[in-house]
Length: 445
Image (tube, rainbow, N blue to C red; front, side, top):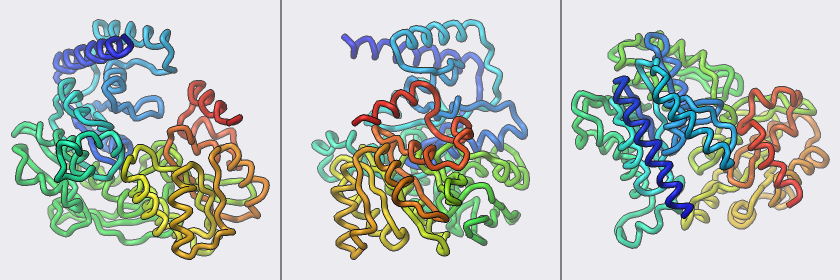
């Protein structure tokens, strides 16, 4: 009965959203990928807003990228919680706004999440993008694709994830644009197969929109961005950036360029961009520490990227607070072990949170010769916070905080170590009463 009710709600929201967008004839930019979707959504919005009335599915500090999240974003429904009463209120608001609110945007950016088979198919029934951005590939949500291996015995998990995400650019019409990551072989392999107009971005010299890293330090990042013989320099100081984040910026700049925004204006928009919470934010911590807050979520590519940023602080003691990478299924052990092999060459100490970190990462770090006395394991984030505050920190350390969100909520660590916790509501991820109750429910476990 509950499944039928949920399916009915999803179909109703899909129907409303489809008719609403069709009525107002807005240009839609669809964004997919395994890592960086929300950041590129914000970056595209920042760039396009220089010339167009632009909206996006990022609302209230959340990337609304699902079959229910996208309708709520499009129909301007404010999300507060997930009780039965809230759902009734949301459905009423969605219906009311459908009939009474004019869609005020010329361009609309939609983050299109793929967590399981057929997700992209369902989203494409809801809306048809004019531009498709394929940003990155990783084994994120791999466990949800394992059933398909039984009928696709010659394929790997990443192939199945890729095929689902690729449906976005495969759906773009001949008059539309596919924006493809030239540096990713799987994504670039779509270049000849899609019918739309195509443009590539990347660090590869053959990309249409090229990036070249000029300087990377703990205080600033600079890169040269080139398109059709014109080159401009991008400078970022507020956040920690490396090659993978640069590709995210390149994707956003590419969308700006095909929408007739000058390269210089694209660069200025990126330099003025505020990252979403929990994505490589530098925060002053207690005892003169520096926190690198990447607590929103985690996957192996994102974790390795975060570790590379931690490696910029060679003159300080580097502590990596790492939570499990979730929803990896049969890839869980190999992904955690591979991350450990990279991490042992960077961090001076580890605080590991969750059963997978304790079982696989810890064991692999020991095999790699890492000092056992410099690793501390916990199953509860609150207990890990107490240990870090009371026993581990001496002063002046740089602390990377990175982990998946489900049942871990590593923003607990960040908030507990902030020098000024009054800023938490503004700069940390998963705010509001719903998430506060979730975090507090872990305290006694």
